[in-house]
Amino acid sequence: MLEVRALAAGYGRAQVLFGFDLALRAGELVALLGRNGAGKSTTLKALMGLVPPAAGEVHFRGERIDRLAPWRIARLGLAYVPEERRIFTDLSVTENLEVGRLPRREGAVHWTAQRLFELFPNLGRMRDRRGGSMSGGEQQMLSIARSLMGNPLALLLDEPSEGLAPVIVDAMAGAVLELKREGLCVLLTEQNLRFARRVADRACILETGQLRHQGAMSALDADPALRERYLAA
Image 1 (cartoon, helix red, strand yellow):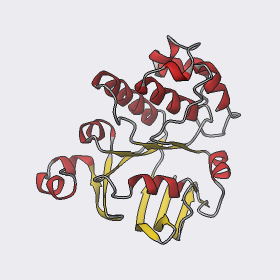
Image 2 (cartoon, rainbow, N blue to C red):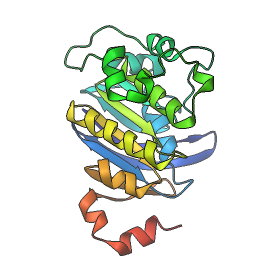
Image 3 (tube, rainbow, N blue to C red):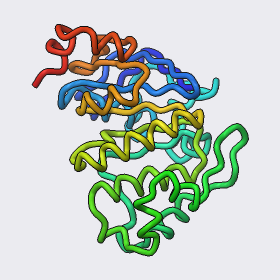
């Protein structure tokens, strides 16, 4: 579904990502882990075309996309949910969802507002509430739900559990697992190792923009020395 080869990216003369490789299948969830400043968010932005890659290639469903504009990448079925959420604060929940609506996509789950209210019951109970009056966790749910209205085949999630109350984190984990069951390919960045354990099939660890480890999430769980080396504060 998504293949990344020797990807390098940065900001001006400051290179952040060095030779990143990754391949994801449909229905697979990979957690991109690492300390603050490791290059996790830059990786997602480079995949989405928001940070132009300096080198390497990105292929989505067999098509090379690293030279495309972000809106063209989105139209192909790759969705991105930034850490900052960026919902429309003056619009209601339902109106935010309508902004993200795209036609049915062959091979993808067709999402409707009602279906998303079932996935995120909190949103269903506040469908007429303005985005600006929602909590951070509710806004995060809305941001993900709005991206799903585009009927994507793959989803990039940047720190989905960041700053959320434990009860909301639990609800978020359940929703992410449901997306995986629906066949979406999901790549997420995380600081919360407990959250990553609950949802991820594989883990990739970045350190100073370089891929230091890639393997099953269970293997990372079983290796405290690896976690201490790359993930301890």
